[in-house]
Image 1: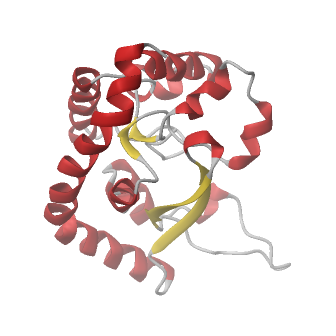
Image 2: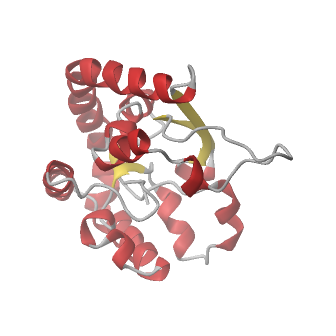
Length: 200
């Protein structure tokens, strides 16, 4: 990690996160309430999705999202495949990235940063190479350098390489650039990948 990047990560990045996430969450409250109502109507009352994800240094935290899938099961009580449980209302929430709004709370809590490597599932932790594991030297992000450079068009190796590049080059202006590009993608309706999650 370069000295200037290390200084920004230690002293400036958290200030930027709070300064932007706090007013963004307040402004987004009506949208959040509307998205929650859509999810609750579609699932019979459940609107908040929680999932364990690894944060900085691999520490596990609870990630929050708007629920976008039902709990539909087969005759044996087994959950149906994701595609069968993702209804049109859930696809819409994902396409508009409204399902990601609760993660602004994760940012305020310090679990996430606005910009950083996207947090994957804990099951991936043992699979990283020593270099790839460096993506956990910083807080994971609501969006990231890899996400504005192709997302699902990239291989996992390419995504991880971009994540590590970000760790070594993080700066205020780089974060501003990523956020600007992310807003453009979301407004164009291109905020989700084939799995329906901007995160990945």
